[in-house]
Image 1 (cartoon, rainbow, N blue to C red):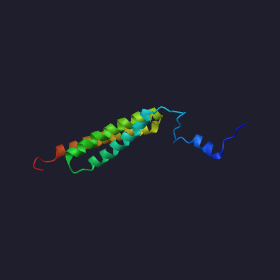
Image 2: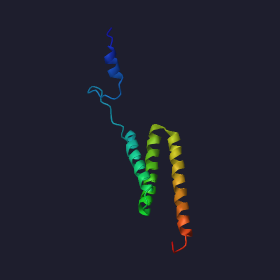
Image 3: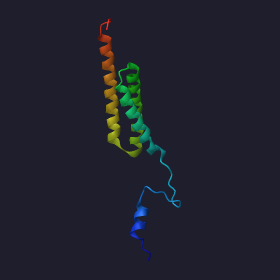
Length: 110
């Protein structure tokens, strides 16, 4: 009976290395988390801008990030994350409506 050395057993159980004899297909849906993260950070940066057009782009970027996170969450069965994204999207839409109402209520000279 052949026993693996501790080094060999660690190496074979490590999920970070790929062995030529054990090719694993790339899970492209799992990679969605990276563009989702980048879009979320970009959206936060845009929303914090003093320029109205950048804030508007940030709003739409946040909604795109919500869609990306929901897609990734569905794929990974992260249902709490999906619920969070719906809540965040609803709060962003509510905030945008309130901001539009505040602008509409301002006197014309401002």
